[in-house]
Length: 55
Ligand SMILES: [Zn+2]
Image (cartoon, rainbow, N blue to C red; front, side, top):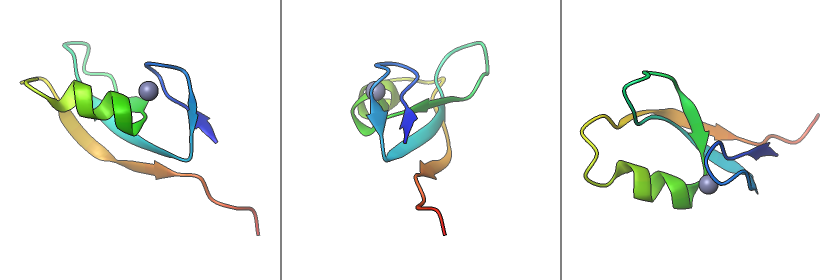
């Protein structure tokens, strides 16, 4: 599990996004991703991160 960079809740899937002028990548949960991607010209999607079980 990884924590969302916005709400700090742990989630099994996080979305890698850029959403501000810093140009930094953040990992956010689905809920935060939805709100960040709406009406945001700075938003960029960089893939997803998924928790994987150890072999
Ligand atoms: Zn979140």
